[in-house]
Length: 457
Image 1 (cartoon, rainbow, N blue to C red):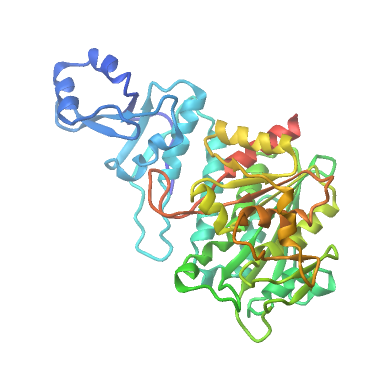
Image 2 (cartoon, helix red, strand yellow):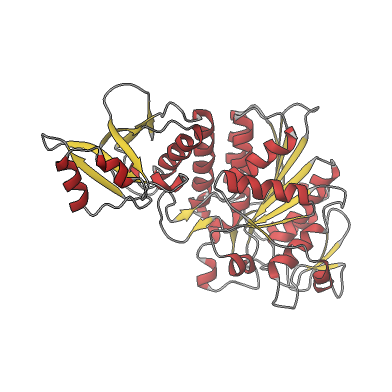
């Protein structure tokens, strides 16, 4: 699938107008064209189109309503809905606008066709002269990687297959890759990862990628890689289990961010850590009120076997903090509480560092990939105190679940280490322009931009 074609040659123009600017644009057009636009009911509303014919009845122009300022999703529906052919953006000269519109076109071209009859893309967009081609390509490829990984059924995306995907990305960018699997996790002191994944036939593992020059700022990304979550012995109901192939969405996201950083040849010493497991049911599965000793020595009381993501992240975060990087950022499809608070589209951001948090929020606004910050409220730390261990993975209180989960993770990050935690849905519940139902990259571009901003500050 190639959403773009080289510049030059014949292409149908896509003329962008705002609601306020439509009247001005029409003033200089022929009377017949004015009548056509009026009869079509086109008002210039963002994302709406009007296909105008030429004198011979063929398609002459596409009028596209856009936001003011332009938004990525203004072009999100075009690649899959316009008639077959090649198109070009008409009169878009500003770099930021051209880049946003091109990226929206690209993201709207996506379709996950692995298990069904493919629907080939029949349109292409001439690269706008003003746009940042490298950025659009990197963001598109990273987003498609995230979507593909999440959309893949768990039968074809278990810990072994996720390892293959990580290895392939590392090979593509000449990064160093290693994996610690099965009982090796116990020998090398990753007991929490092993405990959660040991009930699966596909062994648990820690996937570890390093890239970049050792003298550059160290940035470590940690992603929750629960390839399928039954809930364990505290089994989920059918409705809650249905989408659990997406519970490795955090892992997919760190691979997406890493893809962008490596493709851009960012001056970072990058490390990616993914604890990859299935939370399955078997005779050796963890039980409620079992106690696990984690990598940093803290003991974890298993209050609920379905709160497994934070347990595997405990070991990965402890290892990440050991190297004292400039920053650690983790991604996880961690809590339903975050979705209750912020809905499915807006990831929750937690951080122990105001500068990093503000950088991520600012970048999210600039690149139109928003997050919302929630507090690491210390008053709720008492809720995760264990009765028979240092800490519990499941507070008995039903309130503030996203915060208590973040506080749990904070126990495994050294206070001196700059850290951010992103709790996200990683899934579109319905189809919208540029965002088909299914796996989705959320806060990907925001975190990428924030990392670049922070290491250059």
